[in-house]
Length: 237
Image 1 (cartoon, rainbow, N blue to C red):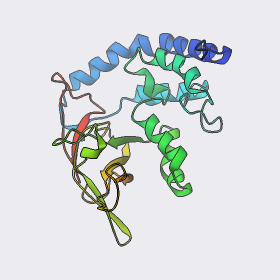
Image 2 (image 1 turned 90 degrees about the vertical axis):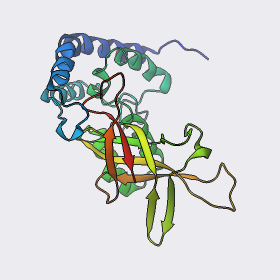
Image 3 (image 1 turned 60 degrees about the vertical axis):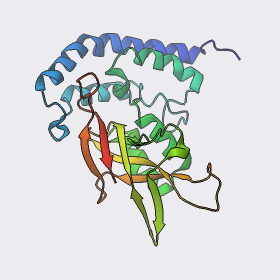
C-alpha cells in the first residue's frame, strides 16, 4: 500500500498547519490558563465555553477546514482515511485544534456511526447539528466494575419493554459528558438473550442527555485536573 500523501492531502494538511500557526497557537496557552484559573474544579455545572472557541470554529468553517474526518463529500471534506491522517497529525499537536476543525473525539466516531447506521430521523435530529458543531456528544462504554474493554464483560443492560428501551447500569470515564453543549450519547449495552451467543448480545442505543434517569454523578480527575470544559464523567442510568 502506498502511504504517500496525495496532492490534496498535502495541500489540506498545509492549510491546517498554517491555520493552527496563525490563529490557534498564539492564543492557546492563554486559553487554557484562563480555564484553569477559573477553578471550577469538578463542578461541571459551572463550566463554560470561551467565546473564542466558537469564533475560531466559524473561521475554520469559512475557510473550508471543517469536518475533515468525514469521507462523504456532501457532509465533510471527502478525504480518505489515509488522506485525513496527515491533517490529523497536525491537529494532534494541539489540545485546542481538533474541536476548531470539528474533528474532535468522541464526536467524530459518533458522527460516523450516525452517518452509516442512523435513520433519517436520527440523522436530522443529531447528525446535522453535530456536523454543524452546534452540539457535542459522548460515548458511554467504560464501566466501573468490570473490564469493559472486552464487551462480553458488559454489566450495563438495554432491555426492550413495549415501545421503550430501558437502560440500567453505570458508566464512567465518559469523555465530554461535562461539556454544556453535550446533548446526545451512544450507550454500549449488553442485551441479555439466553438463545444468543456471547458475542451476539450487545447493542448501541442513542440516549438524549435530558432523558429521565440519566444522572451525571461526578467528573473524574486525571493527575488532579478535570479537563474542563469537557470532562470525564461517571453517569448512572
